[in-house]
Length: 321
Image (cartoon, rainbow, N blue to C red; front, side, top):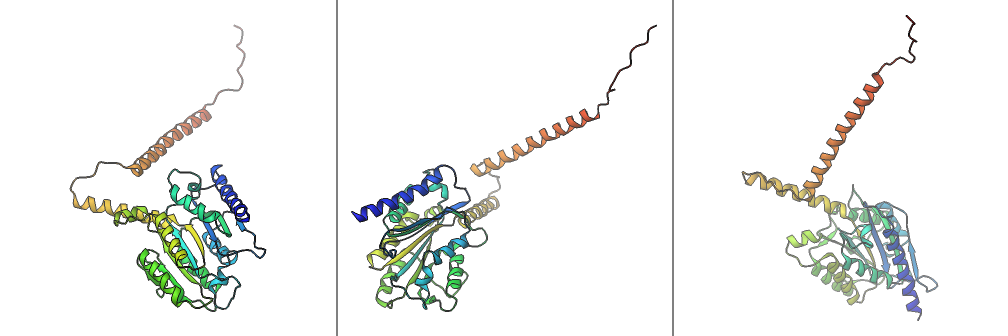
């Protein structure tokens, strides 16, 4: 009965976050982040949940994960905890925006439902609905920098693994090629992990479009769910963070589209006459700007003409003849 009540409270928290999206508080430039763990509990054994409704930067999010989420206590070797976890799991998505949590348009409803189920079924959960999408630095690099700041004296780099799709500047970080490599790594670490150690596992999604072009059938939801299931099947205690970083993925798609169009233009003598949605948007925007400039010039000309009219303020009465 107590677990049912805890689950109901967590569900209300998740729905309250979604309700804020529905009334229009979410910005197109913000992304959601969810932190949870089914193995951590508060000191009194009750559900430990919180929602931060402030719009914060990605760097502040990383700081909150290490402080409020307690990750500095897990990953720093000099700090000991009564409730250690074996794996700190990070999944960096590429497509989910804050508005997509409540709206099924331009989003993955299955992914949102999966996050909902994992979030509400956990004993410890933190929600960050409004994270400003990082534009100058990738989320994975911010996470690595936050780890070094939280653990300045001792960082177990040998216990950190990233996927090849993550662009990290530290060349000493171990990288894994695919999802099966992560599964094998988790099973191997289960046998070799020392007591009290916590592994940091980071998987960066390549986006559904990149996966389809590469011939991969795994969607972002499927990859995330398989990774969580692998951790649970290994019997490891874990805490997980899902955060979306669509800016770099969108920039990559734009660059890829530009290079493809350039290559197509160089290989064919004829100029392409088709116009996609992006082309139509740009043409409509340019047309609106030109029409606005014309109307503005007409308005300025009319005002200048009216200001130049010099009429007498009074008229003399005609003289009688």
